[in-house]
Image (cartoon, rainbow, N blue to C red; front, side, top):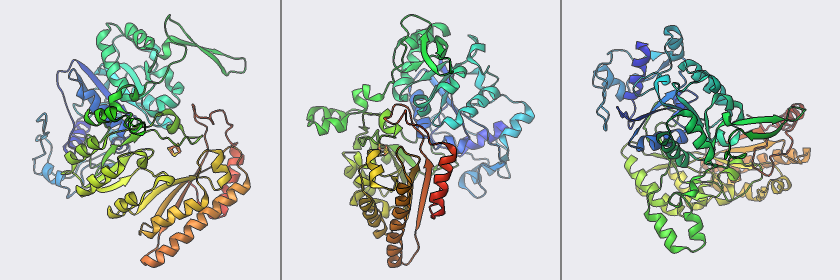
Length: 535
Ligand code: SF4
């Protein structure tokens, strides 16, 4: 156990911005069902950490799946490591906690998982190294369904009964939220007491209020279920099946519990959205008020150089997308599109500028933001190197491209989705191949010679002709890249990423059939043979 505790303390010593509130009324263990380096790159996870810790009565600590590889957490020669070796590990700016008791000498190495197993240590929180089972609430933030298995694993490691039916009043409340909770919570319904259906900014504070207002777990679950929106309590439903095993209905077991749970989105709170709509409708007063009021903008709150993208300040500038592509889960589930006012984004960016010169703008549609010009100008004035999560092809502006080039970001990701104009109309992405080639050409002409292309096979109505057109499209883009490459005297790269279409709930394509495995493999091979590699 000593090695694990030391490992966690070293990790904390390498970070800035974490919080430890001792003596809080309510203790929440916020779990990411994957390893630290991945979890800390997740903006939703960091946002919930900030939100919970902003509530005075709450102390929220992080928990990750222990690393399985032998890793050097603090690299030799790094400034943090030098401090640690000299016994001068930094103290936390807000709570003054420090790590001067750490062993000196070589850089820290451990295989956390092996150490947990060898010493039979229950899973610990990062900040205070407290066993997870001692917290009042264990909240999982899950973005990907593939991490569900890690959730069960972490519960097992914690010593908390994995099945909710086996847990008692003394066990922590097990909560699950995050993008996967909107998408497909049923596989983990039997492990979970409360499933958040919606956005954390709204659900987190509501959950905390309900916990304080109710005496017993039973009362709490019923109160949450009766809110009608935002909280799905699996233990309060019986599932009725058809003879063939498909679900007929979910029947609530208690009065006033809704048969269908509506999603709760932060646009319910006028402070947290709708600037774009107000501007579009010419609602000057509302727009002015939205610009004035504080808006919670999810952003990096902990500077964690050991994490993926840990040297970059990430900030969500908008949520949702107005395009309405028929397959797109994010477009439909985060409807309506909402933005964070430029003023709030720039204020946060200013606070972080002394830590990093790299900023990542997170959004499904960066250029949908009505104040994107102001944001880019402000960030460039602060000498930030700007990158974006992905770009909507129809909205790439010269100004944005200039900002990206200036940031020396040599790669952008765009999503033509498919190869033919016909199929693109079917999925409601109304761009032509000619337009896509022109836009990529404009990117190459600025010296950005690497483009990642996101595409799918197996979309409804797809034929081999669509696949042929996909190959031609990639070839055309490649030709433009080579042409520009000659001018700049260096080679570029086209990185096509090809995935099978999976119908997503609450989209117009939700009931479309999934392409059968054999056929999907044939199509991937068909395209692959023509030199479009897939991942
Ligand atoms: S443009 Fe992108 S984010 Fe918007 S709906 Fe289409 S796929 Fe989704």
